[in-house]
Image (tube, rainbow, N blue to C red):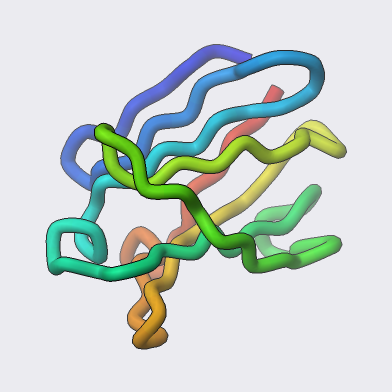
Length: 98
């Protein structure tokens, strides 16, 4: 998998160790002062997520980050904050593939 950055939306994805990727978010929710950001993600078909989950992200100097396993070849994801505001890339979510 190659790293990629969506600078306008504040999303960066990069491979880490093993079969994991790092997702970093500094987008709208972060810029709006969210006290906590969660990664909502699922595997396989981006239109029919398998194993959907919501994971608490960690605040870092870059924004909010989380390492997640790449169980299949595709992961679709979006973000929400503790007030249940969502950033889903204008309804398109984000997708990372290997």
